Length: 376
Ligand SMILES: Cc1ncc(COP(=O)(O)O)c(C=O)c1O
Image (cartoon, rainbow, N blue to C red):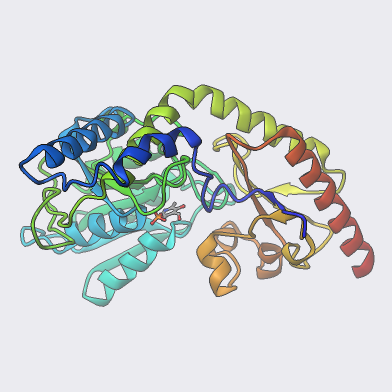
């Protein structure tokens, strides 16, 4: 069996060998608990704090604002549940967007089942929020506005700084799921007005199962995990090797941000230039992370994935792939269920070769041509 070309960087990225090398000493030899007061503990603690500095530096934040978690899902859960269930919370409404990841939408719906009020705003056909809609939806009852920075299915960048300005005008907290943005585009939590931000290592060539939540000082947040209180309200023994991996991935991503972005943009241009069948790009063409291309093919409404055995990719998020439902992000852009099912999400990055996208363009062109002819 030939190995397909991996074009699912939106689902997860390969582990960078440099990250793996940085983690290695903390797997066996460096087994100490970072909270132990002896040599093994001190060494592990120092490694954890170096990683914290690297993560904080990429956000323009201080290290004390970073708490390590198991990933962006936990970070979103903590941000929303922690804020809405805080004893000092007097506001009851959550405002978010229809194109958010399930870790935000499902958490918000859970909180709504407990009595919170929920406003899910639509997006424009280009995938971006209409700031007028947000302004009109706001009120003094809104506790939190939650929006993704880079969308995981269409790569579109939301105007988070403008959203934060509006949220703050009504006294609400701005939460940002930056799982697909951290390490890929410049983030400055102060300049952008972000109060809570979730991130994860496995979208930036780091290990799976580790992430962080940035918390602006004095943001009201109850713990999600009660226990020993290790991470200032996020209890549990810290996984040193994973955290070191996140730190290394963040450091490398910071150093390589311009090069990685240019490489992804080159690959996107090359892939699109190689397609000789009609296609549409789902979502805004310019306000986007170039390593995520979501394409629709007007010639066919047949789900294409099943006809592209040489490519490892998905039609939507990895989670949607499990349920088999059409992508809620694409339907929020106005695509029909059939159009959404016939769309492809192509994710590529640091380790993708130009020949990979050339081959992808050829395979997609061949499949779409064949299916369009069969359907005609
Ligand atoms: C936008 C977004 N948020 C959250 C997540 C969940 O991240 P994690 O796998 O770290 O829980 C993902 C990816 O899976 C994502 O793309």
